[in-house]
Length: 596
Image (cartoon, rainbow, N blue to C red; front, side, top):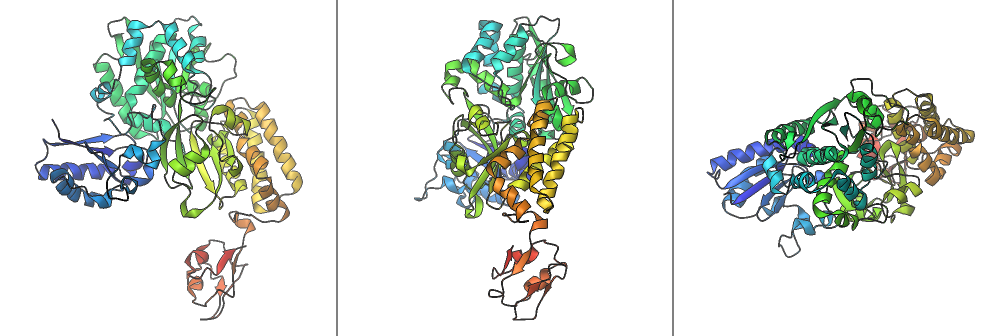
């Protein structure tokens, strides 16, 4: 029996920051101090506060250490684990109260307004140990379903819970399963979308890395509900940690006969296999994903027929994403009323968001549906660095739209976001401040869409390219006002005529920025000016003669030799030579250089 457990984040973020070296140093120092029988080191999934990695939590006192380095480990082991004295300099500062006492992690701003269902085990258990999952109630939901419920009762439970797909469109999960169950076939399939191609999104990856058995249990429940004995998880190959842990989980579940033949002695058979994707964004679309699993080029198919009628290998199939599945075991165990009590009237439960961009607490959060954007950004996210003002938040990635400051208090749910021209998407939430150019943001997402278009339909293949060309003209200062009309016309054409949902939603970033930030577009066109000072073709750097002290630092810094002047006299920038790199403005100690 160990007296202390040291939980080290082994998610992708902390791994890239050096958590494997932390684990190695911990094991070495613990052995050196003779504590192997007293202290256990456990590698977990993501704790959520990715900005502060590598993260380490020591139990039973739940001491939260952040930004730990290998050189800190000897002190932690000798002081905390051996002598019981907390190393206060490494504590997550918000856990330290003004009186010097250490408060619970759950009481910090980042965690206190979260409610973790899909992420309940992430950062808590060893994802490579099935017994730890079972110890938290794992596979009890599957046992309950197989021994106490009919397939129809399982589906009705999800309908009563109001669970909607967390992959983007928000289609009712129970209804999707019901439609598939109604179609008789000699074979049906349960598919999981773990492709997660949106820029800035890493929710599904984190569940796979931190709690892979939750997915496997839910897929087995789905197989029982629709009458399927085979599941496939389609996961991008760029997620090596997730793939490794999912592979281990499948092996362990098979060994314990929780996957395979005659599960729980009920005669129900179900197994899961992994299929790796090559990173094509279009393979996040359900029919393209299934086509890719079949070993063909990942391109969408016309609908109808829908996958519930004719999906993978031409058989009735369901597809949900990782987060959707991760909610299901808890709904089965706690009841539909419990889940439906959270969220809003039409958007039940919680939603996981990957916070990124201009925000202090970059990371993963799970909040009840209906939580306001202000709460997520200012309270949980810790606000915007440098005291900058909130300008907009992009939700839904390339398929979503920008939420401006005027809607900062909007309750986040499916219908509210659609009403203002955005969408929930899979849960990426990119925060932007006053220094971001919204025309440039729209161009960024269009560049992504053009690059990732499968090219099967003309509307998306050519329409998005023409849209991008107009945006490039605007950011270079060569566009005319009639180009805005052409851009809007193209947006509506692409939405109406694209084959799949990804093409149909590709214009959303443009349409939402045009709607809320049209003045920025017009400034680029009419005044040949980028208000945010981002678009290089439209800006120039100027030295304020009254502030310049003639220190020559800017001239010595300039890589193009564009700054001239003598010592202790005001300098001047030759705009014909200036390459607009901004190095001079960064180095100036007197604030004499500014963008114009």
